[in-house]
Image 1: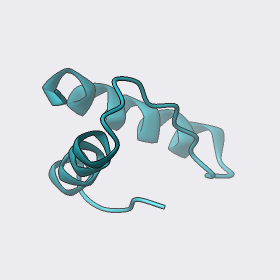
Image 2: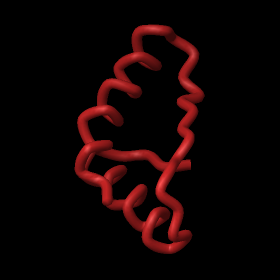
Image 3: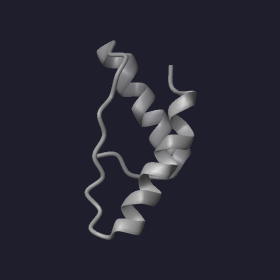
Image 4: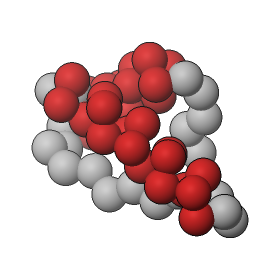
Length: 52
């Protein structure tokens, strides 16, 4: 589970990419409230283009 600010999560996701050599990630957000879950995905969407 990755938790934190967008910058923190970006760093953690980048580490997963670097360690595994994968080029694709599938994410789930185990948040009950629809609005909060949607916001979580929006935040991930802002950092996704920064991942290499």
